[in-house]
Length: 245
Image (cartoon, rainbow, N blue to C red; front, side, top):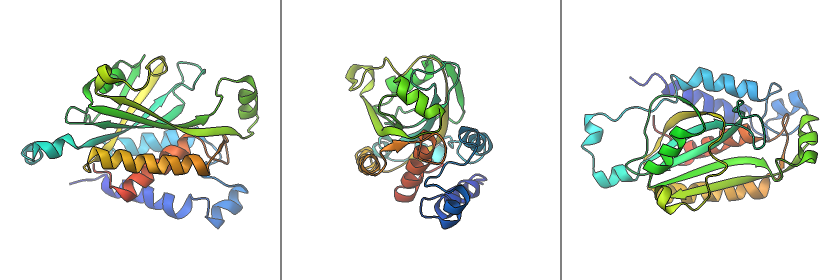
């Protein structure tokens, strides 16, 4: 019996009904556009803690799944949440959130949350996957002193969605690895998509491109940030393609 399905469905339903820019109730309560609660990152970390053990754990493949068409298994796309240090920030604080899509039969469909240092497990994920995609939302100049001052004083800064691709393990990298490894990070398995890798990546690309055009500013509180982007992106994937658990 899948005890987590109801919890995940209720979370997405709650986000759809009560945490969108069009919600009059939330707009009046916060007095500003966006989906970030007053306590910011702490709220999202609490949500992760509450839901990850029961609602978003991957289900280990059973005997019936192992007897499926091998070609179908190769299309499976594992979905992960990854928390890592802010760009230019303290390496012991994994405060930045991103969504990871790992593609291929060798993608690590793990069921446990991983706490790691210097990206050893994440490097293994890249090496084992036929392709891996990372999506996040961050300031255009994250290490600039003006950006840091504005963020710490709760002002908005120019920002954009970032899509990094790693193709065919380390032998076919499209993006460098120098920014992916340092510091403490957390990898959370959320589920998987059974659509073809091409359709998933195309779907994600269209959504992030539209998001990039529509949302051009980041605000720590009362606006869009890396946490709200992750929730928006996961909600879209679940609605359009269905995240299996």
